[in-house]
Amino acid sequence: MAVNLEGKKIRQNPLKFGWVLPMFLKPRKTTAEIVEVDKPVWLTPLLILSLLVIIASVISGPIRQLEIQSGATLPVDFQYFSEEDQQKYLDSQASQSSPLFLYVFPVLSGLLKIWISWFLLSSVLYLSLTLAGSRAGSLKAYNLVAWSFLPWALRYLVQIVGMIASKSLISSPGFSGFIGADATGILLYVKSLLALVDIYFLFQVVLLFIGVIPLSGLGKRKAWIATAVSILILLLLQGVPGLLSSALGGLSLSGIYF
Image (cartoon, helix red, strand yellow):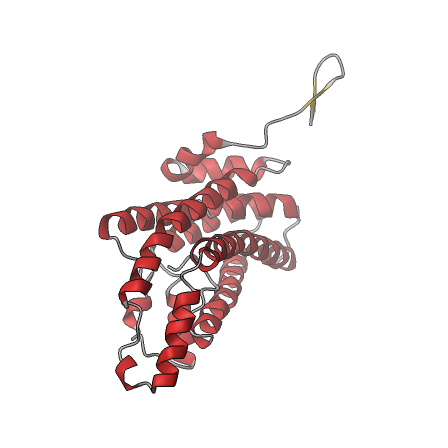
């Protein structure tokens, strides 16, 4: 909180929308400005992502409901199920057409995915840089990581436009399409990891690699190794909900039905 010439405290705006477009056009300059700030400036990108998650959930709800009602979500070998198993599956699908499953759970899981991912990556990155010899404060790590998530906004925008245009959900996000839908065990876990990797994720990695050097004050090699380890740890943790989701019969735990 700044102080004017009369000694009065001036409340500063924590929102920094002026960095949004430059983050894509001039990432090196913008990340350098972000890591120089000694106050919390992480709120803006997280609010943008949260709003897009809500919009995407509202759009995906009716589409998912229509797919359930039309039988598009039935498994390929559904006709070979026993009558009892078929009825159980239909009952479970009917329950997932309620507003709780169509809107509330997707919004909550999407918001948790963003905020928890930001918190975990910020904490792990700060710890990794500290162990590598950096004396940068944790606040600057939280700021940089938050703004590095901004490419996710492009991902959500593309998915929103895709759902509106195709009237269908995104079935194989990222590179997960390279592994078949019948994957089990370790392949299912790998598929969950590949679903997180796309051009927007790679853009995020680039932003972190650019910003971590002025943030940490370390050499490129140490700073980049610490960053790569942090990203890998986050990816391994993010793949777990996708694996549990499939194991629990399709209940979305890792995103907003993407």
